[in-house]
Amino acid sequence: MNRRILLVDDEPRVLRAMERQLNGRFEIHTAPGPREALDSLARVEPFAAVVSDFRMPVMNGIQFLAEVKRDHADTVRVMLTGQADLGTAIAAVNQGNIFRFLSKPCPLEVLACVLEAALEQYRLITAERELLEKTLSGSIKVLTEVLSLVNPGTFRHACRISQYAVHMAKQLNLRSYWEFELAAMLCRLGYITVPQQVLDKVASQEELSPEEQAVYSAHPEVTERLLEKIPRLEAVVRIIRNQDSPASDAELADGLFVGSDVVGAGTAILRAAIEFDRLAREKKSRHEALIHMRVAGHFSPRLLDALETAEVQSVQRQVQLLRVGDLEPGMVASRDILTNNGVLLLPKGEDLTLPMIEKLRGFARSVGIVEPVSVLVP
Image (cartoon, rainbow, N blue to C red):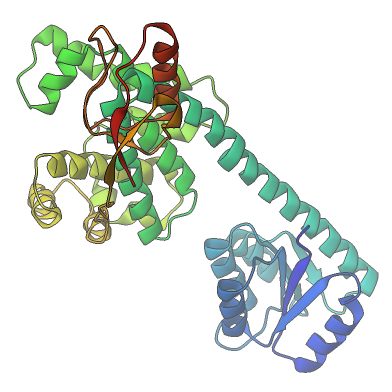
């Protein structure tokens, strides 16, 4: 369990005293000021908690803890100060979102109890994040693998969109980008209800009949119905629902990316990722795609700036002839994969996902497959 505590105070005597008293119970680190503390938070392993004085040079404790909240949200924040007036406490709670507010001088046992409570709070925060990132993401992975089995092309499309979305979120230093990643991976889940001929017409930008347009336009609603019963996906569902909505004034003015509007920011990111991928599939270069999006004026300049570095690196692959039992996820069919009686199971150029490989092995055992199969191996 992480028991790393960062003590921040511009008085060396106070730091030495607290370090001496607490070192046996916790893994104590110290910083003589806010700037040094922020450097430590950025370059070393995560701290479970940070304890800050209020009156310090460069920035006060409230400003410092607000930066910690922004850049290291999991770290639990405690203020220990002699400036124990009500206004200071209110500002600390509102801006720094602190866990506890303590007045100097603080008895050792009181401080130690608060730090133990802060460590437990950190454990709960990280355990919840692990639930979201591992358990929930693992469940969603099952849905995406079903999509890869039903419609491999759409699955690859979703993977590309997700890659662009995560890249933009990281470039903008946005928190909770797991929600943007899941929204991108699942935004085309509703395609499983759309006939392939309709998807082909959409891809080639052919005009749809009113009936076809109605079926296609319903795919975000279908996705929403499939996901709405899964806990913790409320924001993800709303992002997917809004993917075809027009850009907001806040988005175009970059106002979404400095606040806590996860749905608004996620919607803007998803729309930009979808359009960027569409233009790239039209064989436009990255530069041409971004010029087109800038001229259109429907996307945040900050998102387009982030996409300037989102070029996907090509992977060198070699052709191998393998038995079905030797296939692995990540390979790509370099020739059509057929049954012995000529039924097409996987067309050339499609990815071999785990569900698809299991499907091929099932056919190999039942009706037989033309082997060896030709695949591209990284």
